[in-house]
Image (cartoon, rainbow over all chains, first blue to last red):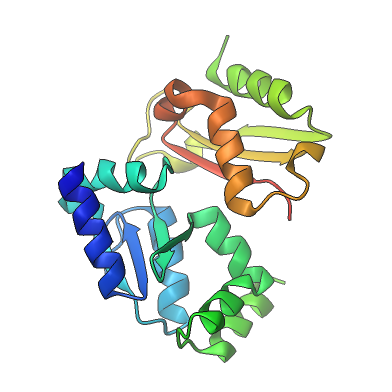
Length: 120
Length: 85
């Protein structure tokens, strides 16, 4: 757990946006991870992807870290934002845009609006 | 008692919901990771409850995780939650 925690701390400090997921952003291995990675990719967000399937200690470690039982998990500036349901809701409500803006994370606003138009 | 019933009972007791839907989506995930014969692995849950008022999204989700308990949470492969805005 300590090793996993150190690794997570270091990853979150080195990257403004981190997605802990099953698979990679290019090849997600789970529908929920795929949805969140897809949103971030579509919005042109520069994010680090961490494949928890490649590291058993991390797979449990990230759940302990945030006291959150599921994967994917999104972190912005080291703060846990949520999993698939929360990120989806925040994307559609515009809260995710606001969070990125507040934290100086660049993204394509037109793409975000397109997601909302398509799901209106 | 089925797992679906147990989920419903726990959520009803914890949140006295004005609206509650516990849907077993397992068949839609046949062949995916975590699927098991007989279902009860993938759930979609909708809850509307006064208990959630004023709580953040994360706090609402945590409350549901807590109400279901660690054992039940570990048995469910995927849980999609709609807890209102």
